[in-house]
Length: 324
Image 1 (cartoon, helix red, strand yellow):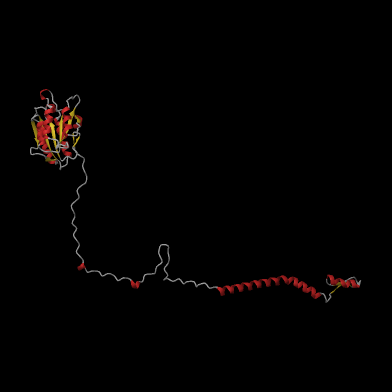
Image 2 (image 1 turned 90 degrees about the vertical axis):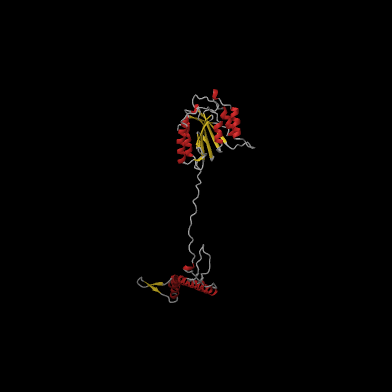
């Protein structure tokens, strides 16, 4: 019994013995107490020791690696940037800064006396205007670029009612002509021919044409009475050597005793304005026929004249075209 009580503490810890009176007393054996304490201390301090050893090992490994890198680092030293370094930009090439000491010397300034005097500005002549005015027209017929023109007007009995309107049309045409153009007006009735100016062609200047029209109205106020034969009037016009003749009439064929011989008239005009080797004639004759409602005057002779001496087309004009 006593043996069992003493053996139990060896297996499970400090022993207790029964004292008289029923109380227990703990028996601490000196052979087992220090070992238990050592085991308890080891269980508490063991993890801390292991942790301290691991951290110390890691710190040592880091120091060794850092020292090795410092010893083996052979990189070039970083450049020192100063104000003398030229900055690089995408639009400016890298080049050395200019040497101020090698800048070229300034050019010598000549004295005022050595300077040449300024050349005077001489303005040139004004340029001629390039505007080309429209060609003048007479009773619907274009005068184109003719420099010399003769208005050949039938003033026979059938034209009495027309003549004032025709003279107004002549005046309007002269106002639209250029001063460089020259003209004359020839009124005829058979052999009765009246022409202005008497000295030949004149310039179409406004002042001169106004005076001529006053004289022309006075000249034609006296009636004509010799029929519509245009030969004598054309002979007067051809003597002026114009480039263009504008022949205006109500109808040149005539009637009765005033009937015109067409063949003789065409032959006379051919002699006065002969055709050249290539068929061209010195004077172009364009015919203008005045027509009114109920008028049946024939135009056979005028058409034949225009085909032989003009552009082949007789221009037809009514009274309403002139009275404007």
